[in-house]
Image 1 (cartoon, rainbow, N blue to C red):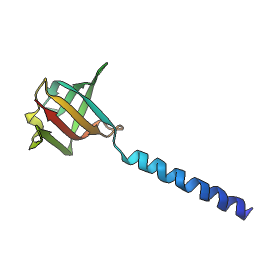
Image 2 (cartoon, rainbow, N blue to C red; image 1 turned 90 degrees about the vertical axis):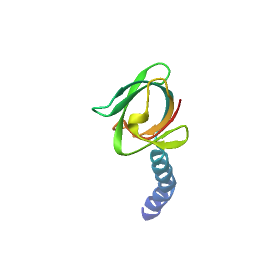
Image 3 (cartoon, rainbow, N blue to C red; image 1 turned 180 degrees about the horizontal axis):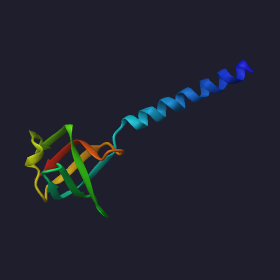
Length: 98
């Protein structure tokens, strides 16, 4: 019985590690800024077939043209690539191009 438990555990550990690694990589999105809500603050991005709102968090990093920027520097029409937290919708990084 103990051998079976050890074998099951030995087989499961790599799968657990792969699952955690996959969860560690934040989702990504690319699209065009269509609206901003500066009160929330949030940005609406057209990601192809739908418009999605992403929220600015305390650690959100924003760049425009490869340079550090503020969330308020984003404008409708900018192309963006961003990573975000899929559970909260909080943007982790927003890289924008004019």
